Amino acid sequence: MLIWTEKEELRKLVDLLRGKGFRVVAPVLSEGVIRYREVSHGGELPSGVAEKLSRGSYRLIEGKEGSLFSYTHGPDSPKGYLHPPLTELLRVKPDLSQEIPLPVGRFAFLALRACDLKALDILGRVFLGGLFVDTHYAKLREGLFVVGVNCTAPSEVCFCGDMGSGPQISGGADLTVTELGEGLLIRATTPAGERVLSELKGRDPLPEELEEEEFLIRRATEKVMGHLKVENLPRRLLARLEDPRWSRVSERCLACGSCTMVCPTCFCYEVFDEVKPDGSESVRLRQWDVCFREGFSAIHGVPLRSSVASRYRQWLMHKFSYWMEQFGSSGCVGCGRCIVWCPVGIDVRESVREILNDG
Image (cartoon, rainbow, N blue to C red; front, side):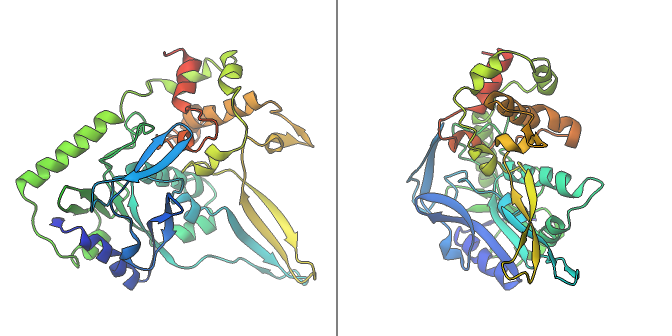
């Protein structure tokens, strides 16, 4: 099912989804940054805004008047809602009675790019695809509705094309939106999407509108290709595991973990217990952790990766090599967030090229 519709219908979609009981998470403008936040009405969606992204730099600029998607994304991704930074896993009373507090409410994510949809697929493999199914993650994924956007304005840090995750959406969304100059093309790709789309106003698209969509996607694809040589990348990196270049590549790294915080697929966490001061309850919590932290690899108090170089190597190898064996895909979707939000502007593409001497 495919329609052409006015851009205003997207704002109405927010109200429609909220009326169906969804907690709608969408892009909003907040303190000069595009953030993903739960919204109460369609008027909160940004308009006429674009981004200027580069190594260690994020800046909003004026976009085309009335445009809805002249930007890619800010630091947030669905990970923050489906695998929250802090999760309460268990409560235990003094009598040893236990309660597992499960989250409530169905999410609808609006305006996810193809890279973040690929990241959702990867997180699903991590938390749902193994021998152990994560109950809390599964509960938050339950009934999820996704509105994806074909990315037609990628930034200079985007390399989703090289990683096979974008810019065109190939799956994972109920509705797929392409912004044209004067309207939107919206496709329903699931039965749930068809039911929602049937409630929006629209018409059959004209041939020239389909041609415009094809042109915009083709142009975007050209921009996100050729930044990284991915053929046999896991094997090639493994062959350079002891290469002295690792020390040079990582010498600017602060081990701050910013890249892991904004990465849509990084999932490392620690689990700890807290006892309330009055002794009435003990709570088990799960909190995001960072593999750049020296104590992350500690056994009996001794860190196995004491140098920043060893921790940077572990992070990069996990993303581009080890994940293939663990989960059958790369851990990188080419979104470029780690490049933008690195305080010293380390570009992971340059790191890989230097290690492999790819020029």
